[in-house]
Amino acid sequence: MPVSGFSSSPLILTLDVGSSSIRTSLFDSRARPYGNCHVRAGYRFQTGSDGRADTDANALVRQVTQLVDQLLEKAGRERSRIAGVAVSTFWHNVLGVDKDHRAVTPVFSWADTRSSQAATSLRQQLDESKVHARTGCMLHPSYLPAKLLWIRQTAPSVFKKAVRWMSLGEYLFLRLFGDTACSLSMASGTGLFDQILYRWDPELLDFLEIGRGQLSPLVDLDRPMAGLLGPFARRWPSLKEVPWFPALGDGACSNVGSGCCTPERTALMVGTSGALRVQWSGRPLSIPPGLWCYRVDRQRLLMGGALSNGGLLFEWMRDTLRVNTDPMELEREISRIRPDSHGLTVLPFLAGERSPGWNGNARAAIAGLSLHHRPVEILRAGLEAVAYRFGKIAALLRQVFPGTREIIASG
Image (tube, rainbow, N blue to C red; front, side, top):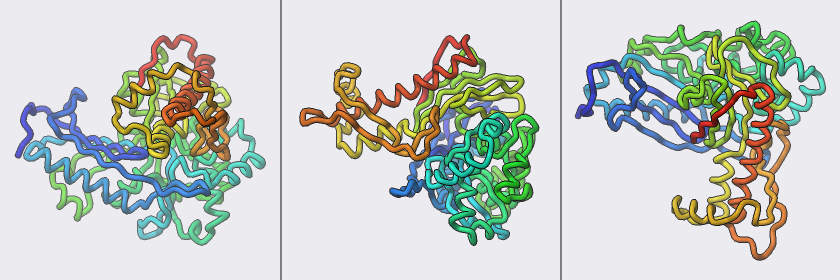
């Protein structure tokens, strides 16, 4: 059945692949959600005590396409009014692809810290301050240089078999269109992209023994793709010839969606991870040590810091400590505890540390426990620890953007 309440204006299908869920929705030309055309599904990375955090690339692509099926079914006849597809994915992910366009590795997440030793090796052999100035990224296991070096060192046959390296969004387009490209936004979060000269960084590629042709062509938002391959054209005839825009980093989209597009507003986001970001247009600015700088597109930049342990810490503590599962009651229990009255200190590094210390080997700890402590007090202390981490990032951002007047929070 068609969805009621639609006007005659074009619709945009949005597809967002986050770090723990996939969402697809329909919006009108004024960015308003339409009807009940929204579908969401969760997924989990495979994790291990060695720092593993990855997932099967083909399984994730199948899940994405199934959600598109469900959304189009909800839209009914209104699907014929879809004028474009906008895509975002979580930043800093990578997988290897063979000559037949098939994944030969899982999708490695930003949370995978198995490349910590490789990151240490990079810092010993390269000038991290110069790399940071060019790419906006530290030499850290979250980013691609450390991950690719780790794969080359620990799985040389796989490294050799992978003729191309790309993000999940690029792999999705490769499956849908038989070709792919990397947006400047996604490239800016790899640690391999020279943000001053708009190119893949030659020094890093040479060090990693990767040819420029093994990475996708770089494009901006004015270069969408159209013309789905046969199986998908038959499956989604309404999407066959509409433009599909290259995947952007989800953090960049979060700032735009929160209305934080100028330095007067800072976006604070807590999802699986967490981030504090300021966006501006114009030339790149000097990046304080501890922060990163990425791009929304060619004109707009984004500076901030990211936590590997935001909602992830809350979810882990809630499940492990078996606290009240009713969200409203749990919120009331937490709010009844005065700040720092529990006497606990939490280091929240379940997935290592990103901003501002960038220690991939950091691990979580809880100090000060005694017999009288209740699970909800431990959870409260964990949330306070996340807030303290945001405070450190905010202090660094104020050095660059002292005129920021408002923080917009989302999650």
